[in-house]
Image (cartoon, rainbow, N blue to C red):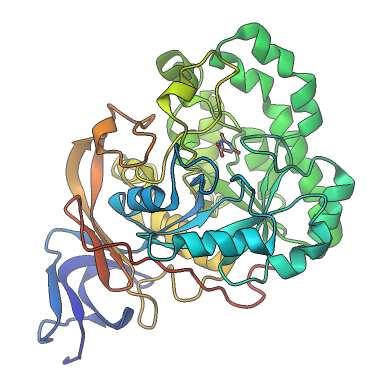
Length: 445
Ligand code: DOR
């Protein structure tokens, strides 16, 4: 086959909707134009992918990049740089910045700031508040917006939709799939003294206990069913929620994170202290096992990193005066590839969770599949390489990872965003060329 391409990736193992097998892929003007045997194609840049797997570009549907307001933790340049270093080609960024992304002006400001500075492609969530609930229909339709985010319980920042009346108003006014942090605000407040009395992050999953998460998830699902609205339940952490959500897939899509699938309490708190503290918390092994069952049986739709950087100094205070959250956008793929190598899920299922799932749930134009007509976003990985994850490798401004010291098998060695290499063999290439993603009209409901 002869085909005019400006980029050809040759000799790799492709992961396409048709399965996993040898092949070449050709791109022109940032789009995939051919998949198959392109050995006779000439012209353009050739990347030799012998010995490598060529994945569709990895999409991280949950990151917190802190700009504006807390750039000492991260900004849009450093966060997206961490993304491409970890093989991630596109991110959905969360609204709990300062000011929060809760108005058209705040969204326009973020899009402005990302222009020319982002290494990966990007879109921004708009945060729901009791005040902006009635205008969410217009906000969610703005270009560059991936959807609406609700915090039912307080976490980092001040976005909050704590009560059923406000939650109902938000869901009534949105057409797209609404992403929700489900922890019950009232129960959190009632139990806060557990954290203060313990003064150790080991108490974090006891303070923000199973019922804190499960109770909020039940309230959310019951409203979603009544209103016939689809909701995306972020970072599910309990065996109970995984089982409950399995019975409510008509309205609920489900996210799990690498942290909750990898770490376990109490060991992580004894080893990492507040560096393992996040909301909702990492819990005991039975919950981790329950989440893996939900990955295996299809209940989990996507894996997002919930990249939530805080500085070492902030994490070194005395609990509970420590902020919740850990970085993860750069380690998302290596940690999950290691699970593939350990036999916990197939490579095809991982691509379902990191590429096809985001595409299916959010209706991203041209992303999530290695197929003709889609964006030429590729993540090249070496599945046979073993490497230790170290703090030194982390380019996120916070400079640490909860996975430091873990040796993983499977490593990202190339990140290509719309036909332009952004990372090769662990080195950045060129400059930032990320753009705002587009979404199909009405996607998600
Ligand atoms: O642990 C968390 N950190 N959970 C959240 O919901 C927010 C995040 C952050 O932004 O720090």
